[in-house]
Length: 219
Image (cartoon, rainbow, N blue to C red; front, side):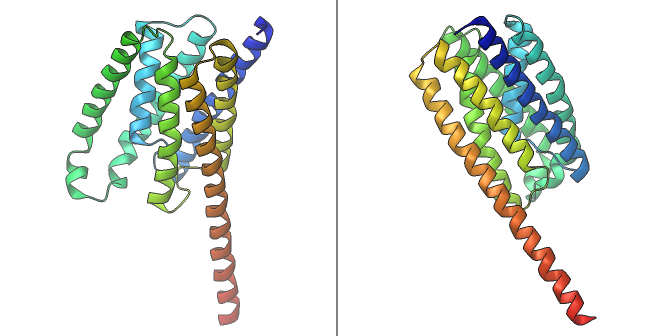
């Protein structure tokens, strides 16, 4: 792969993932909720901290990772502000903050030790693994909430494009069977997420239309 193509793909990955985070932040404040599932947020914060400050990546990846970490800190703020209300179980609500910070600690050391164990100081295995996890968690969050609160189809599309660019980079450079599997599985769930979001919007439009028809008939 030429250096020019590699740079374009890396910038594209950084751009579309940054746009994904920005839209998550915007939609979160708009809907007064959080837009990134708890496990995914813990994994992202951990990975970005490790590969920004413990094992810094080469440029321009380092700059991109620091930008992601900064955006994820805002998403973290949203989660801490609005996340407790999203848990219906009183037990989990009461222990919301201890559970979150314990989970963050466990995931941080899991990513750190996986990267150390596999001599992976650019975090590729952890990154693609947690990206797959995030795609699945977005779907479960949509199903659990039964609404598009904190989510949008543009978030899903930008995430898919960012993932596609990153997948091409590592497929052409590394040829890893595991990363290829993670990439294909992630793209499958990203497409499924877009379809489910579109169906949710269609269902919402139909409910609004039916409500308007009912009001017209009453009047």
